[in-house]
Length: 115
Length: 113
Image 1: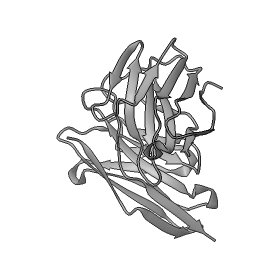
Image 2 (image 1 turned 180 degrees about the vertical axis):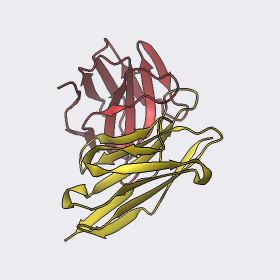
Image 3 (image 1 turned 45 degrees about the vertical axis):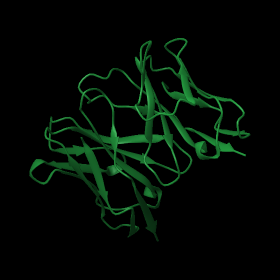
């Protein structure tokens, strides 16, 4: 089945130690998104890639970066994690993004714990 | 700016009872609307979406939602709740300048025997 895969499912890191979360997709979708979801909150969009074009949300901290080396893979890098960055990180994809009616397909998420 | 409001952060129903989860949107232009479900420690799964083809939208797992422009609402219903429906439900709107989704705050559905 075509799907969105996130690895690892659980990640523990130390305060200030860089961490990378991984997302891959077999849907061959053009758009990949990264969301941060804190406990009991809605997902918050951090950034997205439309093909190779990177689009950062205005309120995404500089501490968060992303890479998309090819269509299938996208990485979320947190350069210096703080305690406030502990959250579920969700990757999503969509075929396109014109008009807003495109369905986003979500991966299972990576839960990040910062010690 | 577009916004989505889900009335009731927690809804509790008995197994077999009607499920009604409320969602209102704020937009000058009828948006695309989505309902997603999230089980504990899982990603979001699409239940259904409205794209203006029909006001009553049927989704997976027996859920449906009705778009009412006059009420700017897109409430989610299921005639008979099952224990497996216990999860968090998010209403979302798309359709502004690009494919960005605006999420509501979520409603946790509890189903008790």
